[in-house]
Image (cartoon, rainbow, N blue to C red; front, side):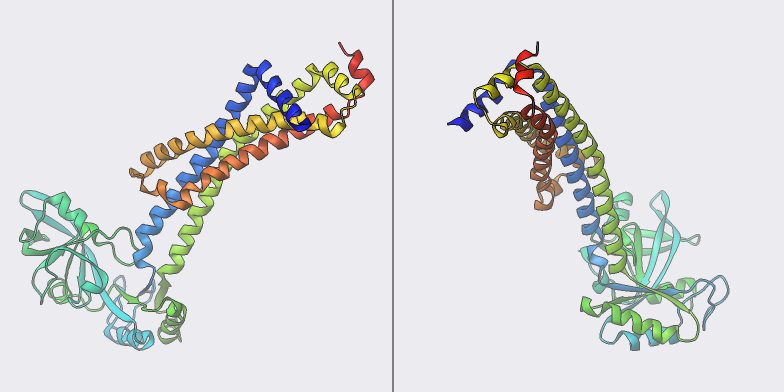
Length: 389
């Protein structure tokens, strides 16, 4: 019964000073919305990057070392030779080893002229790397597959004719590739994928620009990488070897730190709100000296006086955090929509969990801000408090 009495006293005081209490609660609302929205946005960015790069997390990329001129190479045109390719195959064991030609070229579609990334792959390796959206995979040395973004830009369909290079060599599109997103091995969305034979015949190239090793068991990725380096870099560094999983983990860790940093920025506004509540509670103590003196003189314990003021700060925190939690869902929706132009990441559990986190932080900040004013009120001398005007 006594607890309810003290709780009602806290509510009464908040009603009397409703404008001051409302301003303090608004501070909590803004703080909760800021910290939660930033958390949701940061998590959305992390999920977006993770989804875009997840398909290449099982790859090891081998590229010629800068400054190395190996067999079949020449200064300024460093490549991986056939001999080095066989060494990679031996070191990779049962992993899929995919040699890649790559470059850039002028293209012409109808009257439109532009540029595209050009890849040369063994036709049997293309399904291992890329998914088909329309048409057929390349068979033999003829035909070309177009990346989805390039196809959209130039209105390419299966059967379209593309002119390549200054000689305007014509090729037919046999298929459209599904969108792959950003990768560390190849990025065919704005490119054309030819057979390796067509690429060699057209460019007269010897040696490969890179070799991609697709590891079937991710637990073997480190050992496979070490075996390749031991095989090719025994005497001197001839190739650079890196695994995309390590790069992916580094990028996700970086985005995680960015998310934490943005939340910290939002947390500043919540701390400011905490200072506001502290100020409100201190003013409340000063205005109620005589009331506190009366309560103490009729036998109210210090702990019970503290509870009155802690209840006030708790009510401010609860009210502000509940409203802030509701508004932060809208804030997160708008932030993700603006930054990512889609909202599906908002409904992921790892995003929604920031709402209760932000609300809890708002409540804790409010209660902590009211501890000192509550302690000060409970330690007032009853006689001096009764004399206070």
